[in-house]
Length: 262
Image (tube, rainbow, N blue to C red; front, side, top):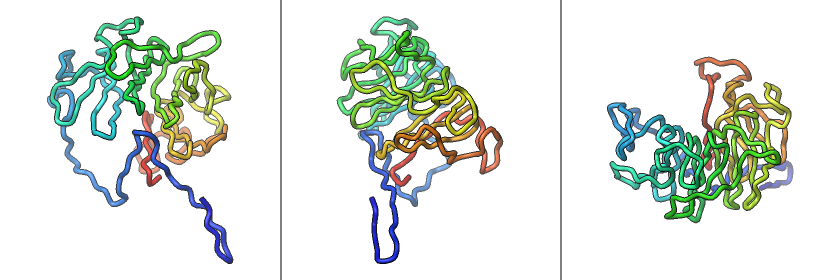
């Protein structure tokens, strides 16, 4: 929005809540430095029982604080309600495969406003949708000659159920509209690289209520921001190509989230 006075005009970027994954965090919030184990084994042991995980790579928390986990090496999605100590499998059957009821190394997860689970079924090079209460998925997009889709590292949806996918193999971010299995490239249109219009092995993405896209550009050790319609990004975290541990650097960032304070 824009505010105007007699002498100045000021543009104010308003960060709108985005679907059911918007985060409302007070600017004065602080965190306890000691974590609490809410899923998996606190002793670090992996396993395939419903109290264990093996290499979980993504999570989603809905407005009821229900936790969904992409349990990659168990080839499943597990759900934990608040205070649960045992998970419930809501997608995948722990056996790697490409049938409608199977997953193969899922790496991204989100849940739409209808309760359907959307999964980046990475090693099957497809995106699966599991309706609320069903463990049988339907394919929303899959690698083909008309829709090149590599390893999907992350995905998010907006209130229109558009899906935003990070494709690490082809170093770009793709948008899929509902009921259309052919994606539109939003970022990384010009191949892998470090220029402002390129990405290198990107991992995480996030889209805010203004349709501004943020990308964890793993191979370039930076976070890029793309305003709506832009094909070139602006580096908002770290220095391009400079990995390190100082407070101005990142080293292989794999996820990005923006709260509604921006």
